[in-house]
Amino acid sequence: MAAAATAIIGQKILPGVEREYQSWQEDLNTAAAYYPGLLGSEISPPTPLQPDWVVVYRFDSVAHLQAWINSAT
Image (tube, rainbow, N blue to C red):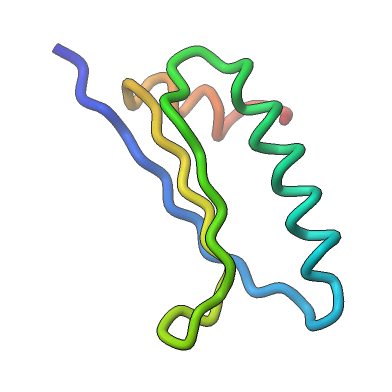
């Protein structure tokens, strides 16, 4: 049985471009939805405890996650 796989990406965003970043990230997440095995993605803005933007991608297998990471998208 294949194990699910998760990628967690933290990114520092320059002050003043948060809206542009969030829009770009939402577009990227929409593109990810076309890849096999995507179970979900989420964007979390910075908090007092976590100063970076965090994006989480969940796939149904390591192979599907690797295909997404290695894609041109």
